[in-house]
Length: 107
Image (cartoon, rainbow, N blue to C red; front, top):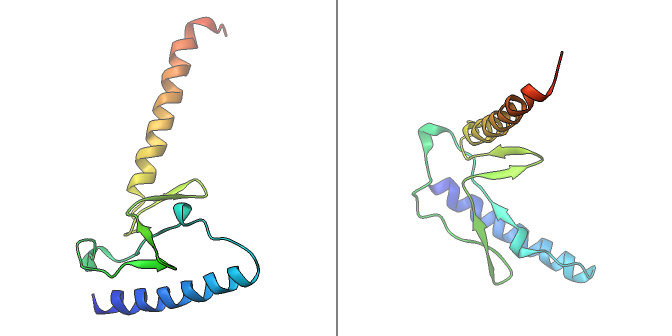
């Protein structure tokens, strides 16, 4: 938990620097699209811990426990369970559609 607090403090400082740089260069960070996630080993589960909030300026950044990045669902323990569930659902749907059109196709 102590490391998480240190990480968040450092992250908030870096985000403040990033925001200052963006303002100087007339750019804007889309806070609504910005999320953060802690990655950790299952043995060090910190999901329920009292972790400080992450801010960009005066706006809080949302903490998530599952996030889709470049088509892959990530979770804090990198178990890929959420990704496997999503892929399984898509494959099942495709197989069901193929099965329904099977009678229309002759070999």
